Length: 283
Image 1 (cartoon, rainbow, N blue to C red):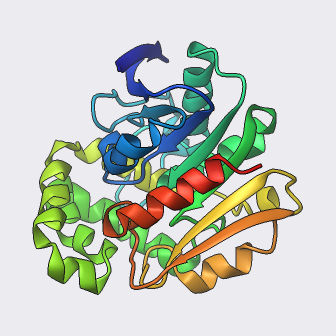
Image 2: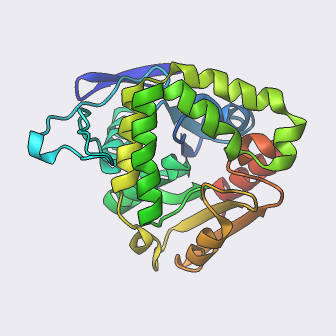
């Protein structure tokens, strides 16, 4: 069922499917809630799914926040960003408001990529609302200096050439080699969908990701069950980085997807569905 609610002077769109144990699915950068469609079709038979379009994606409006000129981020090259800075924590607060709107007192939260960053921020700020959480091709590490420079460059490229041109170039790199060769039409489908993003939304996300702190402290000795889904060919969330994080929680569920990039929801749908259901139905 498609729904919406008003939050901070904008409209947030989301859908609910199924019934039972509440599970929140958060999408990543350059995606909207439909990235989870193949999981929703399967999981809705087993639980209550809450699947939002993050602010600025799909049918959800942008978040706006007043900011003084002195706080504006200087991007590489000296140009000044006119975008209001929205943090990963702001997106987590939006999801908190959504749960309150739906009268959800406890849930399992699963985040893909940037959605994983938001999940970690949520787990840090609202731990009592979670019964478990998962990082699907995502990391608790902050960006290193090289990655931050790449983010700054991304902001410039989006400004100069537009978000669609930027995503058209970067999206193919998210898939593993085998899938990309076997299913080029699916890669093309995701690229086509990226036309719906505004430059401002993509730049807001990029700033938020670039400025997010290291959140390995959220994982360390966390008593909640934590799911790690890792692709062996994932260049965006490298396996080497994620394997360093898996021992940190007290209870870790670790799944390594062979010959898979950053998009396991599409690349190995059946395996991903089973992994998520197993975690949702854990004892």
